[in-house]
Length: 56
Image (cartoon, rainbow, N blue to C red):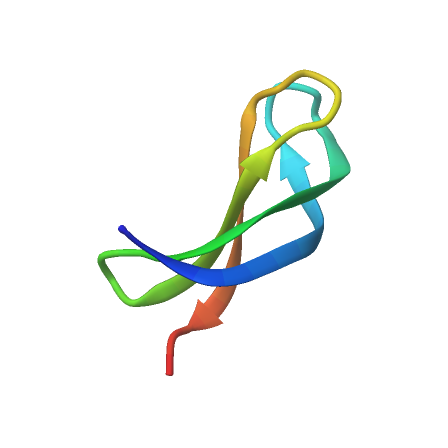
């Protein structure tokens, strides 16, 4: 998974908390070419991911 220099600030679903949480993280490019924001849940510290779309 390749990391870009792009930052992301938004919301994602935390599986552990079972709720949507606002988080800040970095954008990564997955092996399949999708852009994903990856960061930590501010409440429980679990890693949260949000799929953003295909990389250009």
